[in-house]
Length: 325
Image (tube, rainbow, N blue to C red; front, side):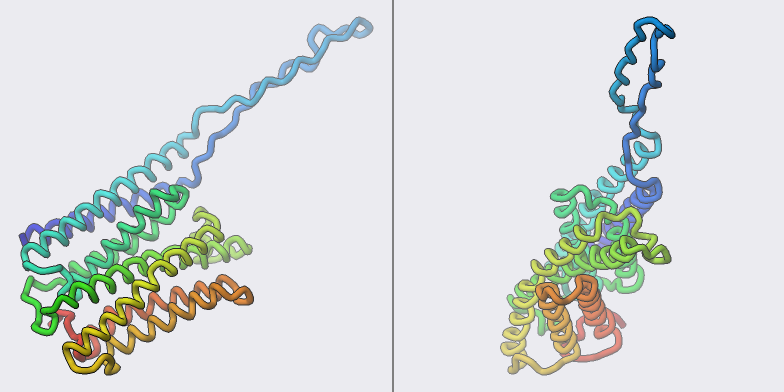
């Protein structure tokens, strides 16, 4: 089962890569638009004489839709291939997690490798739900699949560790309650960071900025829609994250005799909570510009990355379960 899980992760990475390339092809070919071909106008006068009862100019024929432009068709096909590949990669991704859990005889969240795999799966699964609800956001998939390729490949190439039993401190039902909610919230925050960055670029492009990186947003959906999606995802994830932090404090009381000790993980979780709370407050304040509030959302995700990677790699504490040597 362990070897099967490893192979499935590799196949998932390759499929995410195919999805990313297909999205890039669609992105490069531009928006699919149907060209309108107008029939050649008839002669203005038919059989009109100089002094005779002049002829009546016939009505111009109605515009006739021409066959779809070849590049537009290719763009649409590439987009559909990208979505299909993303869905297939998500299935492979889920299968890798399930087989890893079966091999370990536990939930697959015991170290950094497993945690990153689970968070990224939650992110891509949520993206497929969003895409099902709002197909017009498909071109945002280029950036989402790029993130998937980078994070899942990093997990496989850098963070991978063999299956080992859980450390004694994690053998508790709180492991499922606390870690599952942290994983779920982190995956939604991961997805929320994609439209947040997209909004910042697209908003700049709509304001006339034509330098890098704003030009990358030329074919993204409108800034208003991206900003609303960013807010919706963060508003959904924040209460779950809040519950996860509270559950962690309850677990800490039961395991270590104190609910909070400013352990590095606890400290950075608190920092992330404050930043995300600041984003939601700023987003609800009319006097705060939307781009300023969105920067807080991006900052919040950077603190989450610091908590996941930086704390596990550079700090030691009671939460040092990264599994890295």
